[in-house]
Length: 86
Image (cartoon, rainbow, N blue to C red; front, side, top):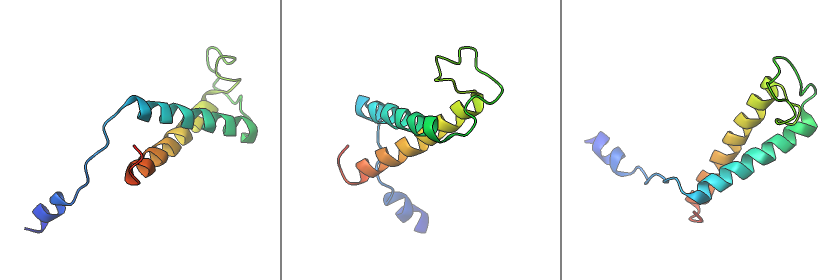
């Protein structure tokens, strides 16, 4: 009985749309820009095959900035969905 009432209160999930994709891309670009100015050793090993394509970042910096970008993007998307903007 309690389980069925809990399942009934779950909000609808947000479906992917081009707006969601654009928000995630912008969040990742912002995270990479923040990382460019704050990471002490951005070119730490292991290096990527084309480091100039990745802004001179090594693999740890790319993983760190894009992970932060996805966390930031998910927060922005869920926040905008909760207030009804998406």
